[in-house]
Length: 221
Image (cartoon, rainbow, N blue to C red; front, side, top):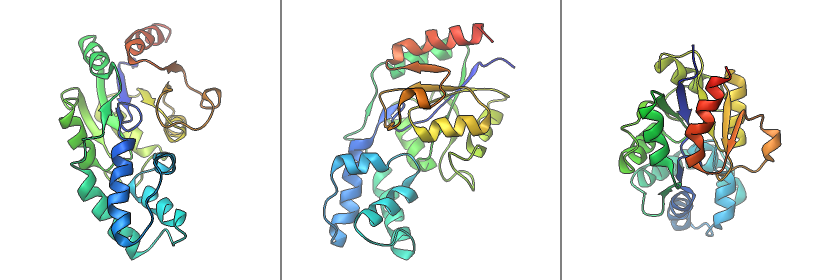
């Protein structure tokens, strides 16, 4: 099978949603008596889904990261965040790159730890849903990234055996490795580790470069 299937992470890869995630976190936590959390703290907790984000924020405040309070906050966070787009933006060149990839015959999908509802809402809001044949969210399966199952499920849904997985973080790199799929790293997202440690086959900082990198990579297969 050719690598004509391309699967994308969402937050930190196609959209810069950290400002809205930060705002939503404080909207949920501050009325409960917690102090506001700085942007960089929240940004550093992004990547493993809302449940882990809320647990880390509770622990940041010195509280247990599990239990009924965590579940209540997760539910409220998702309810608010599903319609939170005011502070979120597409990374430059995303729409043009996806349009070109579609024109050149690539099947595309999403594999994210964002819950599926908010993920689909974000895709609709930015008009990216027209490109994506499958959306696997953090609550679509019993497991989430970096477990390989979500990415494997997206690959299968696209009728492929292999797909380039485009992401921005350590979680995405680990997911691609676990699933045995080639990893393309977008360097301008929420990554904390050094680029050279993530085992990416492709590395880019500008989406304008992605279609050409994909074409060159496929030619070498």
